[in-house]
Length: 171
Image (cartoon, rainbow, N blue to C red; front, side, top):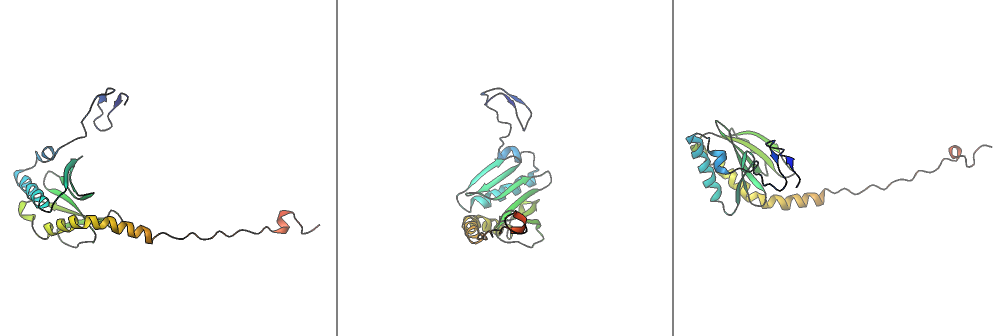
């Protein structure tokens, strides 16, 4: 790659030089949190790890939890942890600040966590549901694509109007 200015940090990067401004870690994202929020994050991570095999990684300002795609992520804020949990249905609860569709089959539920004691049912149940739903979402998306394909309408050919085209008509 040629020498260039980094899009993220605006630093000049020489040709062939390795740069890691965009990479971050879980510990870097959680280091500035209060002890209470660090405990809440530790409890969230512990609950997620108990579900089974998955990948946990930091990306930008979030910590992602995924199997084949992200099923929830944590965005650490100064006074709370913002969770985005991807479910196949809309959940109505005082814990859910906002729910918005993110794909044909997934709805993102934004939840604020401020204390370790909040990481209990129904929140842990929703995390488990998101973990279990993720493989089902892929097959549902494939099925929906197949069923929603519309047949093309036949194109009607226009007949030439003899009076307009100059072929026949008045002399």
